[in-house]
Image: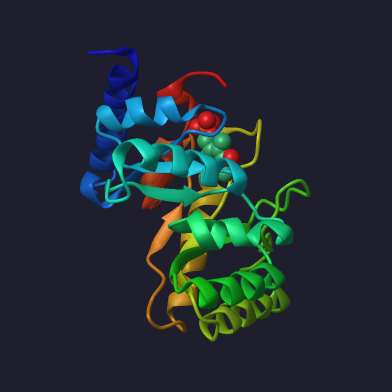
Length: 242
Ligand SMILES: *Cc1c(COP(=O)(O)O)cnc(C)c1O
């Protein structure tokens, strides 16, 4: 086995163990291999090692890599391209044209632009709302650091969900969050747990229910799985240090 295949299988083993620890079926969890900064050749090697879900945080990089990979494998290659980073409004057209799933919708202005462009190109974009439950100022996403007790934060989020549900092209499927940097594991766990509880709370009022929880990266994906993640986004553990 080559190094990439070995690392992939080690990550898969960690994922499986975490799922079993939490009495969950590992097959319910999607491992998104984060290829940002790595060239298209790396994606092709990862494809050969069996990976089919790839994550990029910049839309221009996703568009370029997707086209390079499709030039080799053809369009019907079974890959799902996840755009995992927040979008600037002048880049929404790239996301509308090239992303298969968008994890980081953080404001309605972006939703409106995406919807307009999706209407034009006829694509459907499964989308997650990025949630900021840690309250870190550097994090984007809907302000939810006090969602349990703050009616304003609850209302803002519910309004956003309603607004997005009326837009063409965007298919709202769940929530995404990022754990804070350099904090103890119990604090990371609390961020993931509160995000899952938020999803459950939203589902008492939202239909169809939101089912996707994108959380967990190289250093914390096991905790995320224990707290209910359906998608983990792992870069360094598979591809090495960027
Ligand atoms: C880079 C990135 C990841 C992967 O991080 P690793 O620490 O390399 O696993 C996950 N999610 C987002 C949004 C990222 O930008």
